[in-house]
Image 1 (cartoon, rainbow, N blue to C red):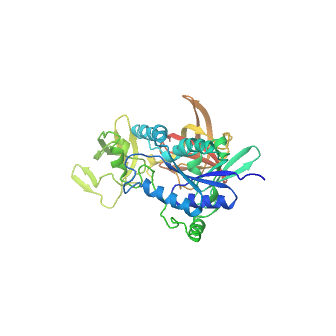
Image 2: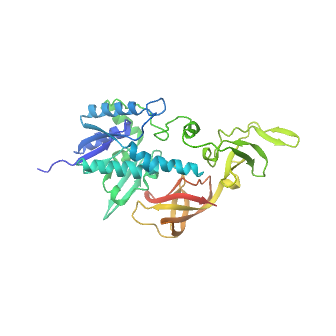
Image 3: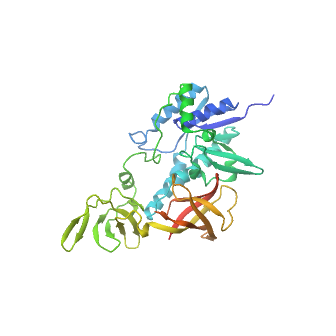
Amino acid sequence: MTSKKTAVVGLSGGVDSAVSAWLLKEQGFSVIGIFMKNWEGDDDDEYCSTREDFLDAAAVADRLGVEFQAVNFADEYKERVFSEFLREYAAGRTPNPDVLCNAEIKFKAFLDHALACGADVLATGHYARVRRDGGRVELLRGLDEGKDQSYFLHRLTQEQLSRVLFPVGELRKTEVRKIADDLGLPNATKKDSTGICFIGERPFRAFLNQYLASKPGPILTDSGVSVGEHVGLSFYTLGQRKGLGIGGVRTKGGFKSLEGEGWFVVRKDISTNTLYVAQEHDHPWLMSRSLVTSDACWVSGSAPEIGMPLGVKTRYRQPDAEGVIVGASSASGLPRFGVQFSEPQWAVTPGQSVVLYRGEVCLGGGIIASAA
């Protein structure tokens, strides 16, 4: 008699991973639920309650009758993800640590741990799908377009992808909630987590202030008019509208109120420590027809052909833009490529990830270095 295959499921305390564990049990897997702790310190306050998530994960494992363990990757997270997060912000860019966390922690450190525990596969509650195509493995968008998380998984390697499953990727969120409710899972109605795990929903600037020094400088309009002072370029991102502290423009005749008209961050000049703002959502400085990346990574196993029409995302939840790869090279040992858009794109932000698709297949992407 053939023994059951073993699946380690990353139980986060949320409903998606809980239902993933149940689905794998239904498919005949021997399931081990493991809770990952990736952050030490102030993780049990109102913004990021690791303890509450741990208790929810343990309650789910008990309800499903699966083995439950916990593992601490806080040191690895601090070294591989958080340190890079701070370096990028200090350089004036806007990183996406969730992308790096998936590549370095969940599907590297955690995958290695799962395999060491005797697992055949690692499963998570991500809304994405995996398809075997001959000798290659394809990463597909989740069936629920509104919840698709393939964007965050584009840096996985073929080897990593070959060892993972995303059980809820074939379902819609409403179906997942119903399954959890029908099973009587204790977290069936639990609110989805938002924000970065180590920040949660806390005030972002206050969090960064604990790690990055403030370096105030001028806030200027695109025509050079001074409208205020910023607290440090690290604390702002392109397209940002809230938290600028601007209520009008000083003119020769005094202060002209522009109440009701919002301001947008349109440029950051690191060399002069200047923040530029404008009152046009589609200001020319915010619109880009092309971008250049660094540190390209192809989850598909190889780069797409130059000139091939592709779907392009420069931020999560953004509808696909039409674009083509216009060149590829290597600088400082890191593979690079460029993208030319069919239509100008809004607030293409250095430090964020650009992710490329061919239909439902996620090909990979890179870190945005610059846009024009």
